[in-house]
Picture 1 (cartoon, rainbow, N blue to C red):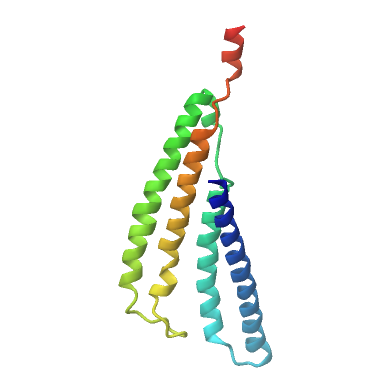
Picture 2: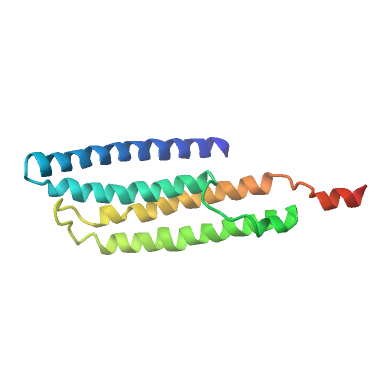
Length: 167
């Protein structure tokens, strides 16, 4: 499972780095054409904004996979380690369902609906830009399965009150 996670992490890091680099170049090009040539490049602005959506969605999937997303553990920490493990598994299960139903299924629906609509400057079907939704959903679903496996495999640590009761 760690090998699968490592491969996914590599794909996500490379994709996000390349996309962010291209976005930077497109933005520099946009500034150059607007202020130095006085003829703004509309296609670069549109493409940079779509690439921003892609890097955001894939970045969110990557951060989710690393389990480094924002959370507030104050409520979870009030429970025993066994209950914490159960709640973590439940949380990951709900995220998996969300990823499959909303992101993958709903994303495929919106992608297919927008295939007939063309982007204004690039003249590319909008469905290609919306395809990030089901793709990131797929990554989130896979990461969720990996997270569930990791949580399930992790032994439950005894909390301090349980240790004191045993002594």
